[in-house]
Amino acid sequence: MSPINPIVNLPEPLWLGLHALVALGREPEQPRTTETLSESIGCSKTHLSKVLQKLCHAGYVTALRGPGGGYQLALRPEKICMLHVFELLGGPFIPTGCTVDHHQNEPCLIGAMMDELTIAFRDYLATKTFYHLLRFYELAPEIRIGVSVSQRTGGSCRRAANERN
Image 1 (cartoon, rainbow, N blue to C red):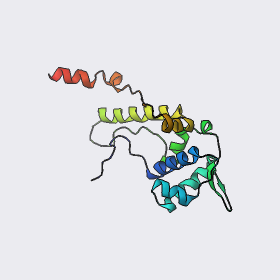
Image 2: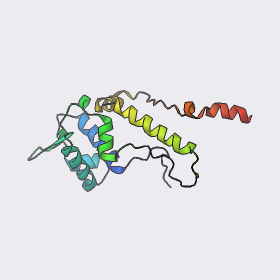
Image 3: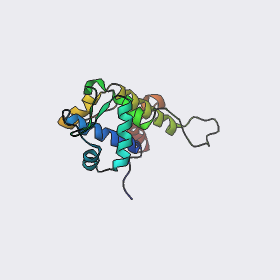
Image 4: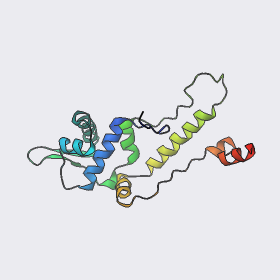
């Protein structure tokens, strides 16, 4: 079985769109065809074509026709909000609480934690542009997203572990 990230499970169109944007952003003057992009990403040309069409309709990329044509960024990287791209290709960030129907009107800590992570990630993306993503590829800095779940629950994993010992 292949490994999965149990917290963040991003839809395939989002993964494809982000990788395509990075490829276009790294060589902004060079139009890239769906075929060359799909080969470099390692994905289906058909799936990528649908994602690129969405990015075109949203105004993030431009399709150039004719010989030497392909796709290019339509906006400067600092004008592309990462939250908008994530929501365009992956859907809105909506805290849903616990999806298990067994709590009998009691609060669910697991649902609250997932909501807190959703909100933190949404807020983080709202402060980032595509320029930040391109810079990440150049500099590879450590990324930190602050989450305040322990404030809401009044405890921490470290304290809980100490209390057990």
